[in-house]
Length: 304
Image (cartoon, rainbow, N blue to C red):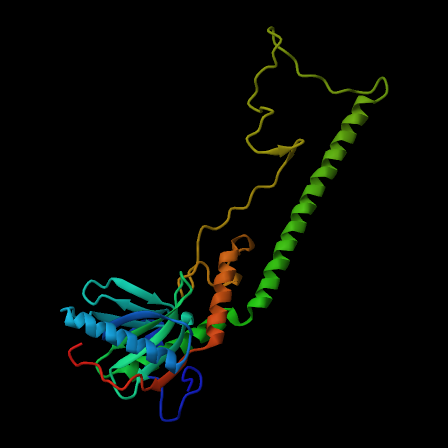
């Protein structure tokens, strides 16, 4: 069942869109840990991961270690896992990287999700004990994913390929404008050279320009209008001023700089921005599968 986009009539979203888009929903849980999995989706995949982490947790419990408590903050920006007292961010999982989320129908406390790590690109399965609200948390992640995807489409992510072509055309136009400016300068240089040639080859009796008068030391008198100007020139022609680019950098809803290419100049349209948009489009296109399933037969110890 894919609850992220097709909702059952007996189920509905848990929160208002404003609660997830302007703020976040917080849950307290115990963190059993995370482990690498081979696939981004699948009941069997998360079942094996839960069994593995439960076994590791029982070993640590026998050694006197307690299961750490964490705070989950769910919003359209992602799922943050924080240390509840210091609010230190332990993990920050962006929604477009989360591909699978499930809760245990035989144990209302256990839920898990699979997220693609941003650095290693490996799929990691996170497992939690959530004090009998596992289904609510999975539905909240599903709703946040749905809202984030809609925001992405509204922000211009609906047609990344078209925006690539627009950026390419804008870059080509800029190159042609630069070439046109260079040609204008060359024509101007040739006109100036032709003018000087006409003056030097003028017939007798024509007026020729006078050389500057010199002083008693045979030096050209100093004037405030020096021939060396601080403004760059090209063969006596002043170059147009260089436009000042705005230093303001806009933030997108996911914290990227900038999120929408239409909001930034051509020179700011870097490969990093485009690769980030491509990745987000690919992640959202994969979708989020939200399932309720039985992970294993043995219930988690109440004292985990």
